[in-house]
Length: 453
Image (cartoon, rainbow, N blue to C red):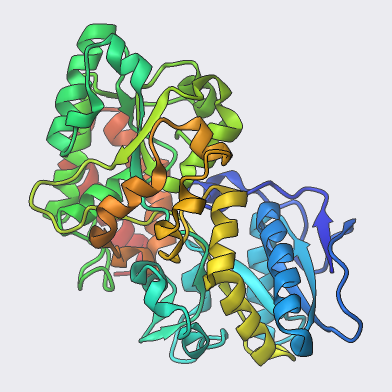
């Protein structure tokens, strides 16, 4: 097995919608870029070669581990996994060209969630139906994440993580301001704590992002709303009452000083990491995979941060939703379609695979069997457990019955709406102070024109 890494590959991008703006193109996407070949584990003699394309090098590490374990358990169906890591945009462009032409196809490919709709349009998507191969695992998988990569009752991609929104609190800062994060349950509680924190410190409690449209959809989902009509599957509806209420809620928090914009436009940026590490913000509401950002980029906060459930809308059945993601697929036309499909189910949905997702990547696994194995989840030597004051899986188990699927994330026009919010609407609301209703009415008109609706 080996990896081919292109020279301009960005590490671990595409795990959030914010990655869309950050990832550029460094090759034309019309051929394999020259790059360094990294040797992985040896494949058995006679193993079937499988080519895989990814855009996050860290994912390749997990796939290599899973190929080794697959070969140990399936010696009669051994594989030689060849992983090519491309820059984010290049890979998606190259893959779309390949599936449309039926030429130059890989056997497997990672597809970022906000690109996925491009590959599942129409009645006969150019991706293999993975529903049957998922059956041995499906009872343990978070259904909302399978739904994200499903169309018309068929699964076309397997998820990498749940990405459940959680809250990260700097307890040292909060204690100095006389605030107990354990009393925060609802968004009203969050707003009240934020105002008190600002009054006590002169600093913002949390973040209003202008470069990523991410936390707002959580509140919209909790309110029972969508970004599109027909339960998220129809035409754009960004000025619906639920969207207006959510955006107004965050704008009100900003006006009291509870929220403030952040350098870099989002918590998931180099400038954002620095500001949070410096103590400029005390609370971050973000998907559970943000644990890896703290550990990797904010070393000064080790031992100071507690993980807790995300704030809720009182009375809502939706306690959290998944944010960001990568769906891994098998293109139709793969020479080894059946083998690729079976390996993919094992590499993405099995217990072993999801233990690796937590231990290697620090992401919240989609296989909930992991959540119940305290030898894994509460391992004191795990670097993520060492960093945080509270245990991620205790939080996940507390909201397990309230993980919702935000249908708008599956709408083929989500990339256009997301781009509009990141480039126009969020700046209007959070930077220019345009009333939420006015900003969203304008966004609705502009998006309808752009989408021809």
